[in-house]
Length: 621
Image (cartoon, rainbow, N blue to C red; front, side):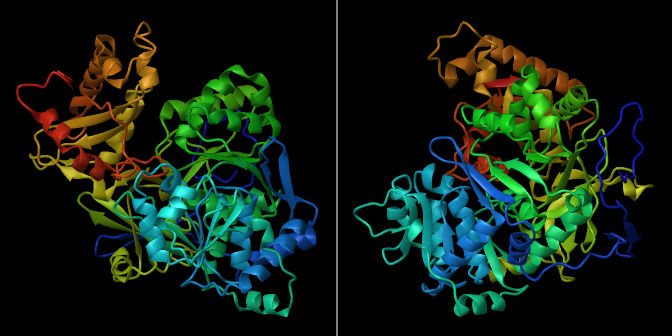
């Protein structure tokens, strides 16, 4: 395993082949630092559907995709079957005169129909836009869905279940737009069954496929809206193919063994729809679509899938690894299957608690007698997404690694931090129908402004990688002029207050001290007061003296371990109401929008700082 770090040698590590982790660093007169890999980016195809054709020819009977039907049985598609279905669906789409101006909007989540429709659209150069199902099924006002539909002007809308998505379709999809459903057509609106998208391929299909090239738009992926309305990020064939070659270079074992993955990551996000689905197709692997999620009542489906399918590469968000731990602790058979052929654990999307990171590493060692590399990276929807990757062992979960071949990185000094900016073939050309946003996203040298701050783990040895140092836009100054780095402080607070704090928002701009709004984990808090009535609500749980004493203790110990005003949390308020999707307080992937919460809950922020101290506020003193 190529590694720029020296790790303890007392435990063997599972043999995994990675690409070389090297970097060339230059310091510019303007204070910026540039980084790049010394290795050239290998050639990559003009369009990702070339890989579908390749694997249909080389490994026609290998399973490409599988999901579960209503009875719980696996539906499987081989590479040959997938290509045949894609060509037939693409031929049917040709007759509909779809285009970038009239793309396909997909409202439902991951399944075989979604995959086939997306690949068929790609095959003929028609963009598609996977949209978060939460905007249709959870939102009360459909505000974000309406914004997306108005921006896209789709020519076709797909939903897996007509009845399930009926309210959203009726509310936002114009009457003249064709609606395709896999099942449950509605009598009051014309709908096409997905099975009817079937036509005999001919010369017109081959000609359309031949016109697809590196600059053809594959899809529009919408940002989660953590900084305003969702933005439609243009994803081209060049972006996706170049990024997959970057991943293949870093995770070189994909070249030796096609990956097998069990994955729930939603395809309307770049991690699931680009990184994970893409790495399977690019490398001829197999993707078992996991209908589970890292949520109570849904994680059990993930556990059952992992009992049946042993992955070779496994991805989850930090919350997913956290909620899986109890199942793995008590089920030796699950551990044995899961680790039997696993090469890599991978996390992304948020900071992983150090205790969770450490327990998974220890559990892997005890299960198989080898350490399994627990790796991560950093990127964004605009970067396709892979921009940094760590392919070596470390004890620091926030080490994001180094840039891959083909990507140029510029670290620009900004208020005591280094803001990351990126340039290369995997970077988006911009936002769909948003020229002003596009212009502001790039600096005068053409670097995309990532918005994340990074710092070297060891400034004397850049090969040891870069540490995540928070989001530039979230940081603020106290009234004393001291900068508060929100990202690291938030991660430290949640780590210290686990499992009782589900999330936290940091307040204190222009104030004398830091205070926090806490979204508590009510189930964990209830365990502190086991004699509460079964129907006790959030207010009763959070008002219980035992819960308040625990938070007061945690806040006090955290404050005593702080190094100064920029890291000392002085006060906390436990919030009874969860974050609102419609008010933009939380994104569809569960990320907290710091600014939106502070704005929507301005009264609670004022209560945090009121004198005399509000009886609801918990003090660290």
